[in-house]
Length: 67
Image 1 (cartoon, rainbow, N blue to C red):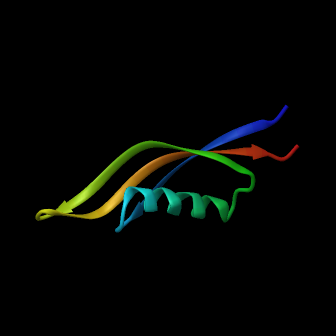
Image 2: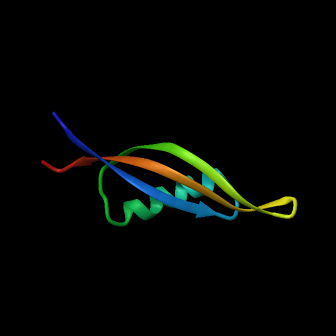
């Protein structure tokens, strides 16, 4: 039986929500091993004028704890 933990992370990108999610996973992977999944909990964006300037996500990253 595997033991799993969940880490909640906020990340951003000036390109897209997808890139923001990738940034969250890349950042988590620097200190957490055995990442198994990512769940997008929330998405928001900053707008200036008629353009989106920043995409933000809150994600839950699930990883397996070493036995």
